Structures are given as structure tokens and as C-alpha cells.
Image (tube, rainbow, N blue to C red; front, side, top):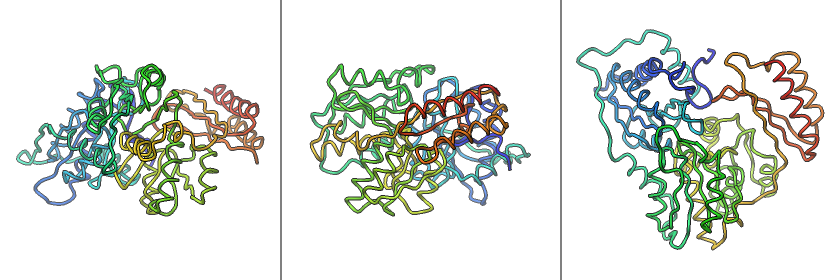
Amino acid sequence: MTRKLFGTDGVRGRANTYPMTAEMALKLGAAAGRFFRRDKSPSHRVVIGKDTRLSGYMIENALTAGFTSTGMNVLLLGPVPTPAVGLLTSSMRADVGVMISASHNEATDNGIKFFGPDGFKLSDEAEAEIERLVFAEVAPAKAENIGRAKRIDDGRSRYLERVKGTFPAGLRLDGMKVVIDCANGAAYRAAPDVLWELGAEVIPLGVDPDGFNINDGVGSTKPRAAQAKVIETGADVGICLDGDADRVVLIDEKGQLADGDQIMALFAARWADEGRLKGHTLAATVMSNLGLERYLAERSILLHRTPVGDRHVVEAMRRYGLNLGGEQSGHIVMTDYATTGDGMIAGLQFLAEMVRGGRKASELARNFETVPQLLRNVRFEQGQAPLEIGSVKKAISDAEARLEGSGRLLIRKSGTEPLIRVMAECEDEVLLTQVVGDVVNAVEAEI
């Protein structure tokens, strides 16, 4: 079945524009409700969380109507991080969990992510079946079986305690100054609270959401403000989350960035030394830098590459029994602690390494030299992605031939935005710029 709604991370788009309309959210709620109401149990429940976008209210209400129309009882968590939804879906014995968020996208976008009863994101097969039900007739529940909805006030505190519980026993953050950038998003209250309760001096940034400013000049994709704040305040480290707090980038005391690859390198080496890296393997996507692969190989750690998207990383981890994986963008998945990427848990594990060894962030955040990597995005109108056009295919083939033996090329259509992503790695930066430019020019010419 050709997927019309679901991308690499749920359903996403511009709010109040197909497919992110109230009508579609209602249909998705009804379809997911029908999909997860397979038995005759008298009680079925769904937990729904959201980030801080204005459109979250509209989508939350529409989803609630859809779910209750099929007899599901709805528990509304309010603004919580995406990993909190995964946790609470499982711990509250819900049949399904939903996060309303467009992650790192701008405020005018929104999205809907589903979690199964085990707290993990849905498989391709489950999403395909829900999508089929959206475009079919979903029979509503009888009038006497319509579901109820209520607010849950302690969802954030439950999550907060879980996150604190992942910090090693006996360690504290006393005397440590931490900048925490919450992107004006879902973790704007939980993240500063976690750090303060563990003893840190907290310097908050991006903690004043107004419905429109999520990811606006702050957060993991726009870390300059946090870098400046680390330098200005003399902080020991900076932690930058994205809008739904499932990804993180770190800033050392010098203001330098550490992306997901560097964080994974640190954790993989540490866990391997301790004998706790399952399969002696790290799962990461095709976007992870070649430098990470070389670093792991030097330590006899295997790298299992997956398609882009933390959901694909988690699927590989579950299939092969792994417990560490993630993305260069900052999704760090540690299934010993959580069912999906969790920016705060990853940040705390980094802080634990600092405290345990009495080391500065700069000593831990630069584990390998990156191979020069260049990524350019080409925006297109929906339905116009030209990757199968002859001239574009030839440009890609020519670029691959020029890079053979010295680098690699990755071309893909984004699963979350109308973008063609052109990425290459090569030691020769002149050649790198040329091959990426040639492919981008070919794509732009057809658009």
C-alpha cells in the first residue's frame, strides 16, 4: 500500500492544511481507536500528550472526538515530552499513546505520532492499517459505549521521577552550572526541574512558550543562543532539546557543539568497556558520520546502519537485541531507560560522565575527528520530487562515480518536510562541494 499520510515519524504538515486538519485528526483518532479496540474488554484507554504549539489545542480536541467515538477513554496529559508519552502509555496500561508535535519544525507545522501499548512507536504495518481505516468507513461505538475524556495532572511528575531515576545512584550535580535550552517546547517545565532537583545551578533558556515561538531561535537545531549563554555565564555545559524533547545536542564549556554522533561514540565506548553494550553493536542511521564508524571499528564495536528516522533505529535495536542507538541529529535511544529517543536522559548520562570522572565537557564531547560532510536541502512543492527524472539520476550517478573509493553520497526525500536532502562525505572538501552542488543544481533545474 502506498502511504499517503504517514512519513518517517507519524503524520506531519502545516497546521490547518491537509493532512494536519481537524477533520483528518478526528479520522485518525477514530481509525486508531478502531485498530486498538480489537478485543471485547469493557475498558480501553489512550493517553494524549502535546507540545506547546497553538494548533495543539485544535488537534487534541479532534483526536479526542475521534477516539471517544469508537469507545476509547482519553487521558489528556497536556504539554509533555514525546518520551513521556511512550513511558506513560505503558505504565498506565493504555492501548495506544499519541504525541501531538512536529518536533523541530516551526510553530505553524504540527504532527501526530502513535505509540503502541508497549510504549514503542508503531510498525510500518500498523501505520498502514490505520491509514487504510482512515479512508474506510469506521463504525462508531453505540451511544451507550462512547468513551470519556479527562485531564491527568501528574503525567509530568511521573515522567520527571523516571528521568531522575536514570541518573546513577550516589551521584549529584552540586556545584555544576548547566544551561538548559528547552526550545520553548514540551520540556519547558520538566527539564529545568530535573536538573535543579539533582543539585545543578540551572540557567534556563527557551522556557517561555506562547504558542508561536517553539524552535524559534532556540533549541537543538538553532543552538547559537545557548552557545552564547554558556560563554556569557561561564557554564560547565549546555543541553539543547528540540520542541518535543526527544533529541539533544550538547555544548561544552568553550561553546563548541557535540551532535548525536559524538554523544553515541562516548556512550558506546563506555558501555562496551563496562560490558553492558548489548551485541557489542551501536545502531545508527545512514546519516551518521564516517568518522563515527571508524572510531567504533578501532574499538571492535559494530555499527549497524538503518534508514533515517529514530523509529527505524528502534526497530533494528529490538530485532537484534541492542540497547543503544540513535541519530546524528540527536535522537539517542537507550532502551534500558526509555522506548524512544529522550533528550533529557541522554543529557543526564553525559553529565554523569562528567561527574564520575571529574572531567570537563570538552574532554568528553570530542571523541573522533569527523569526515567532512555537506548536507544541502532543496525544497519542493508536494508531489514534485524529481528524483526519478533522467537528468537527476544521471547527476547522482556521476557524483557517485567521482566519490567512489573516497567518500559516499546519500540522496533522499525527507519524511517530515517537503525537502530533497543531498548529503555527501569526502576527505577532499573541494570535491565534496562540487558533487553536492552538481546534484543540487540538477534537482533545482527540474523543480
